[in-house]
Amino acid sequence: MSKILVVGANGNLGKQIVFSLSQTVEVKAGYRDVSKATLQKNVKNVSFDYDNISTYDNALEGVEKVSFISPPLDAYADTRVGPFLKKLKEKGIKRVLFVSVFGADGDENGPLRKIENILINEEFDYTIIRPNFFMDNFSIGAFAPMMQEGQLALNAGNGKASFISIEDIANVASKTLLNDTHIRKEYNLTGPKALSLDEVLKTIYAHSEKKILYTDISNDEMKKGLLQIGIPESSADYMVLILDYIKNDYLSSVTTDVEKVTGEKATSFDEFVKNSQW
Image 1 (cartoon, rainbow, N blue to C red):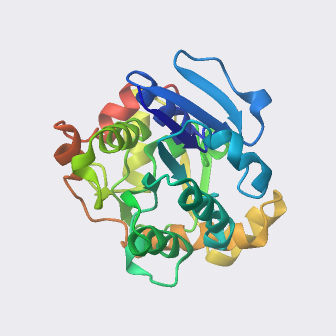
Image 2: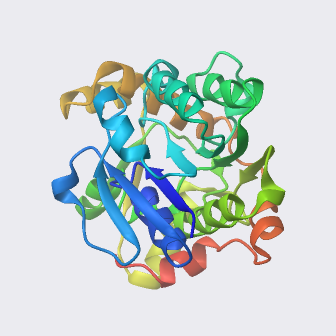
């Protein structure tokens, strides 16, 4: 069986990608803090840190393919990921899956597009997936603390986004990395319908009776709040920008790429809510 390194195994999406791949192949799961890793069948947990080049060799030993996601909310992600991609070339590891973000290909100066272009221009056998905002952000991700408090305050206005579940993203990641017909292919991943935050919260309430009040706040208020809870300024700016994209409906388009790859329709938000804990 081929061995695959999954970078970012500590995150919600990374964990799901590790699980999906480990049903078929041996996986190395890369953690910044390997002490937080859990034991799983067909999975070897290893230390990995983009900023610590000394972790690269051990993580890549015996590896034939790599799935990686960039450091989250990082305006300088391309600079931090660059040395790792250079190491892959040195070791002759060409088959890679990059988890980018929805719309990254629309900004040639964006950090994730710069990473995409390295893969495209330097002859990697790449697959690029660009998932939209995660449905799971409301249940276990970035917005979960606010959801628990019953107050969701974001600078997203009344715009819509075609939210997608991390389970669907992981299924696409697994299938594309294990099948070479997806080499040098790019997929834009969305859920089946664009929803506003009011529609999201109404759906959650319909299935859980959990009432959440959404407050639309300004970009400056959003940044101030993020800084107050210790988010670095560059990361705060990035989050404000992404939510502003929702406000302006830049993330509202819907694709069928999930079904194209997996043969199954993308999970609806209604289905996601029914199967989640609130």
